[in-house]
Structures are given as C-alpha cells and as structure tokens.
Amino acid sequence: MSGTLVLVATPIGNLGDLSPRARHELEAADLVCCEDTRRTGRLLELSGLRARRLLRVDEHTERAAVAEVTGLLAAGRRVVLVSDAGTPTVSDPGRRLVDAALAAGHEVTAVPGPSAVLAALAVSGLAADRFVFEGFLPRRGRERAERLAAIAAESRTVVVYESPHRVGATLADLAAACGPERRAVVARELTKLHEQVERATLGELAERLGELRGEVVIVVEGAAPPPPADDEVVRAALRDELAAGASRRDAAASVATALGVRRRRAYELALDLDGADGPVTG
Image (cartoon, rainbow, N blue to C red; front, side):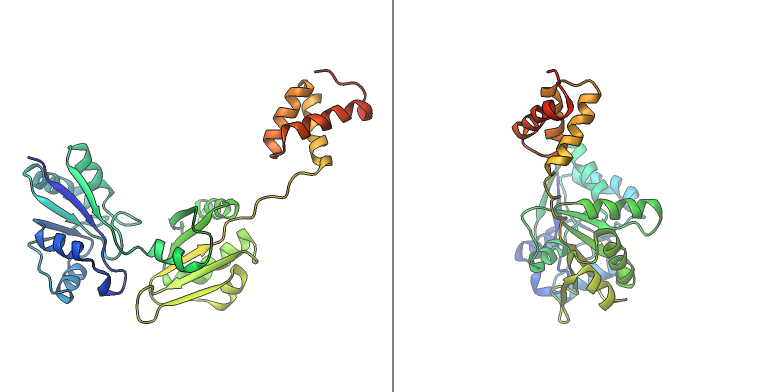
C-alpha cells in the first residue's frame, strides 16, 4: 500500500483564499507538516478546521522528519505539507520530503492556490509570458554581485523575494546593476488589507522606499535586447576570423552566430572585404 504526499497552498494574507480542496486535505490528513506549528495552528483555528496532528518541518528539522513521513506513506497514510504562506517548496522547506517520497515510489500531488510570486507578477504590468524567479538574493559578497549581474543581463522579467528591512539596499543595488531607468515593481502585503504596489523605475523606487513592513516581492523588467551590430562591427569581427585562418564562408557563419546577424549579410560583407583588404580565399 502506498500513501500520498499532498502539497497544499495556503493564504499569503487573506484567509478567504484557502480553497475548499485545501480545507478538505488539511482535515483529512493523517499528518500535516508545517514550518511553524503555532502559525499553522492559528490558520486552522481561524478557518474553523482541526488537523489530526501537526509536525514541525523547517530548515532545521526537515532532514530528521523524512524517516517519519516516509514511514507513514509506506503505511498508506496521507500526509499534507504546507509552508507558512503560499505554495510549499517555493523558497520554503519541503524539497527533501518530496524527493524522499518520490524515491520511495509514493504519489506526490498538489492543491494549487496562493503564490506571492505569481500574484506580484500578475499585478506588476510587466511581461509575464516569460519570467524567472530568483528567490532571496545572497546578502553580501561575490555571490550577491554575480546574481545582480545575472539579473541585469536577463531578458526575461525577474521576480525576487526580499525581507522588509533590506528592500532599500536591494533596490539600490539593482539600480546600480541594471541601470536606474529599468522599470520595476515593489509589491507589499499582497492580498492583505494594506496591500501596496509601487510601480516606477529602479532609481525612483530606491529613492522612495526604504525599510518597509510586511512581506515584499520585487519584480524587475527584463533587459532590452542589444542593438543590432552595424556593418563596421561585423567587418571587424570578420577580419579577426579571417586573420585567424578561417575561410570566408566559415568566418561569416561564426560571426553571424556571435553577433546575431543574418549569415547572408555576414557573407556579403566578407565578400566586400576582397576589395578593401585584398583577396580573401574560401
């Protein structure tokens, strides 16, 4: 007999967002794994629900919880996993439980629902057809600098979580990395009474917002595509390839790929070099 691990999304602020399916799973589960038993217990109390048993599963206890959870699943039980708010395992504990359950051949399913990532993206007004989620940025050092540089070069919309007291510093760092004119959105206390969504450039947001209260999501516009290479840039790249011994055809193919230009255009410019620089073979 095989049990089921159910990942249940819980409200990120508004209790009305707890779905009927989520309510059913929370009450029917043999065990509810949660980051904070007090916080989840309060959610259940306010929702008029009663769980059979709560088990703390956070970054400190998840590894130890794997044996107990997989043992219950092996006995055919139903185990629910929730985070403090939103969708489990998304910048929250739970991945080890999911991996262990799958490795043991148990079913893993989800009850979808609230997600701060998707809520912030949806209301941002920025492109949502392609995006990346960066979670929390490293706090300092080389790792943070590298992540900021990657965000600056990313062509897709970027969604970042940040703690309230570090929002100002992170906006300033993003403005420095991406440029102050890059559009961005800061969403605070989504779905709650005092929900706030600020839309402006990174430079303006960095000047306007300092330390905030509540949960914060930052959404950053993707980088604009680089301007197309002009003929002189293409010719210079062709000369380098030809000087390295490439044939005219191979040089055109290599430069077209590197600069994102049409191969025919690169080849025609390579032919033009015959007259300007002397004969070229290939």
